[in-house]
Image (cartoon, rainbow, N blue to C red; front, side, top):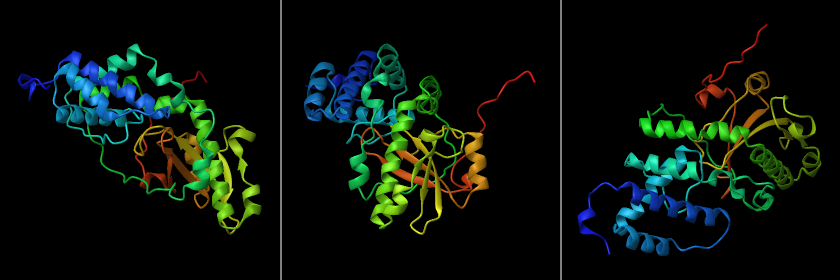
Length: 281
């Protein structure tokens, strides 16, 4: 039963730690394909901390909003809501710091869900619109910098390779549906066969035979999760703008979707220089 004295009062650290741990337990089950019942979790949590059902559900949505900022998947059914209590950032920081949740196998796929590529005709979705930058609350900004989603995705080689293999299957299926099995057989996984450095990962084709040079960027997070772009990739996008395409694979661990970006990239995304190469000559 809810404690009436807590209605309208900020959550304390113990309550926040409890709901964050429970949220991650449910998300882990979801990512692993295990069944669970949200209402059972909510009832147990309400009994433990004395908060109302509405308060618990709203806080779940707050956590989802932070997960989106961190470039991580969130629980289906808990749509992100951003009018959060600042202390939720610290609770999520405590949980991720003391656990190895970011290193769990469900977030590091070793094989792409190729069957999705073969059966889901709605795999391609519109790209999110480019919007003016919104300043984050300082404590959220610190949390995002600590668990940087851009750096994490960039360094996650297994995620990157799985995303490329997934797109390879998507492209083969696309051309086979267009009755161009000949072109489907000639698709090349350039980054796998020749190594990185070409400025694109996959050589595919349009149904009329024109080349399609695909650079794949993969995340387990939402469509708006930022990503790194190398200088070579940017240069090739300008030099071969007619053929070059960026495929942004997102929600990879749950329900993969792709949106595409065509050059010039500056009309679709904000490009910011964030690194310097240091040398002695």
